[in-house]
Length: 113
Image 1 (cartoon, rainbow, N blue to C red):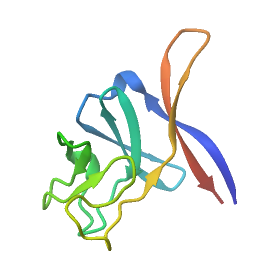
Image 2 (image 1 turned 180 degrees about the vertical axis):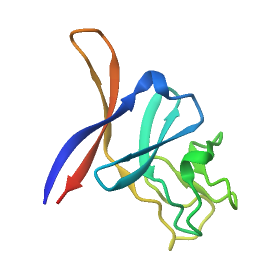
Image 3 (image 1 turned 180 degrees about the horizontal axis):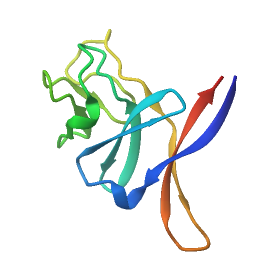
């Protein structure tokens, strides 16, 4: 297995505090923009499988699942409020500026089989 940086979307496709669904190479991901910084998580909430990309980012920097309101820290994937047994998978993320046109792309580091 190899770890690679994969382009997910343009930063222009993201809206502050909202999620965007991205599916590629077998991954189902949610991409969020919080305080102009992108974050990438699994799209399925570990609680009941809700679509995290359909949720929002709260004032504490947590992605909130639209189904039951469970909130997960964007930086760590830890559930907000105490339960240590639930984690949302997060992925290293970065932005890359296209030298040719100045467009900013969001990339995630994914392990590809």
